[in-house]
Image 1 (tube, rainbow, N blue to C red):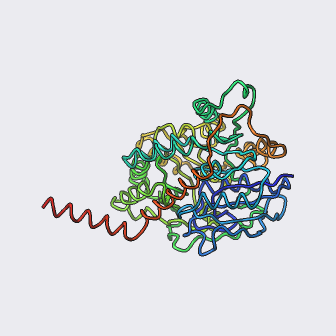
Image 2 (cartoon, helix red, strand yellow):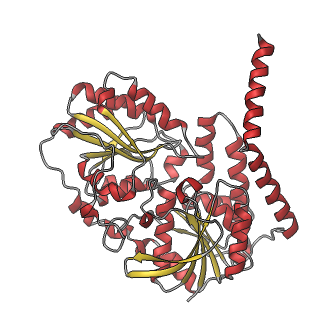
Image 3 (cartoon, helix red, strand yellow):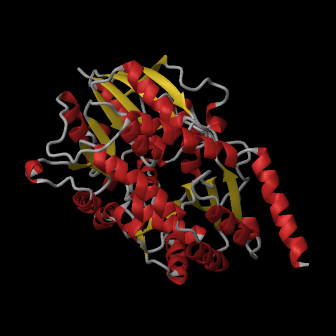
Amino acid sequence: MSRVFLIGTGPLPTDDPRELGFPQLRTRQMLLPLLDAGHEVMLACLTRRSLSGERPAGRPVEVEVPTPKGARRMHHAVVRPDEPGRFLMLRDLRRDFGPDVTVTAGPFLPMAGGARAAGDEPLWVDVPGDPMCEAQAKAHRSGSVDPIHRYREMLGQALARGDRFSVISPAQRGTLVGALGLAGRLTGEALGDELVHVIPGSVDGVHGPGSGVDASRSDLPPGFPSLPRDAWVVLFCGGYNNWLDGDTMLHGLLAAMSAEPRIHFVSTGGALAGHDEGTYHRFRAGAEASDHSARFHFCGWVPTASLPAVFRRADLTLSVDRPCYEAEFGARTRILESLERGVPVASTDLCALTSELAAHDLLHVVHPEDPGGLADLLVHVCRDERAEDVRTRWAARRGRYGLSETTAPLLRWVRDPVRAPGGVPVDFLEDSWQELARLQDRLEEVWKSPTWRYLGRLHQLLRRVRKS
């Protein structure tokens, strides 16, 4: 068995966090099979202070984690991604643990942290979703090219250092192979060596037996709306990301509400701190300024243990993306979670996952940028008196998205990890790396300081005075 240094995002679902997104689910997806396979795991969990409380960062503790095969023990250390020194702390944790192999799980910082923290041991880098496509969507929202420069730099480091890579879909595998070629990794010596493996998303058992959460006893969260008995609930659960088409979703819902008074919209989740905070607030502001504002209910992030009860109250979940490269090469794990709960889904069909599910009649297809079509679909499904049971159809497909099935390539490799052949030499000079990391962390510390914010406000005031 191997000593595995795993870098992921927390808190884990078993900690009942009030925010649960794809990065945490991806960490869980790769952690539990490693533990069940008998490996000794140190999880360096990138967790914001607002979600980790006052637990000291960088101090490993032994914890017990429920897995499909029973309770397993692991080493666990909190690393705060929103504070200075995060990459240096990862390096220290990895050095003290002395792993046989380092593995990263989920976007985006784990990938960058793994490239900086790993020593001479083999490194598996998880790249679930194309980072440059995400950077493009983020740059479009922000009106700045900064995300493109930052993501490109960190992806380049990961491509240069990784020995094996995982992606979320067959389509994304092609884009990452191309990126590896540009990074100089497709050398003659590497011919025939499989560098990139597909690990589809999984929420298998996230609230089932062995999860630490009793779904049958789940209660609705405080503040959940008191809905009319005949309310037909459209649920949006999770983060409002850069590629969400909030305009199409909002105008489609408003038109559907005008035609069908039973339709209510419930949102759990919201803005993604440090990633995309504007999409949610724009959508919410538009909904609350509309004639149907009383039928929009924004619950914010809710405890993970409440989610089963929330899904039980839903009649349909909704996922509407704008056409873009991220939507094509990414995946929509929120759809898998809805199907696990037996709730029908309406979604744009832009990625490999949605195409597969649509082919097996597991989602109602929403055409991109078509609010009228979305409204017609919602009204039709609402008024269809036939009981829709997706559980039977999902039962025939869910094995493909199980924990052990999806992570089989990783588990095979970790049993006998090797460095990739034909790698391009990378100049990871210790002193230079540490100095660059300190400078980056110092800049972040200055930018987040009260003094910097005060000077920024003073600068804006002086500009207005000069203009007047």
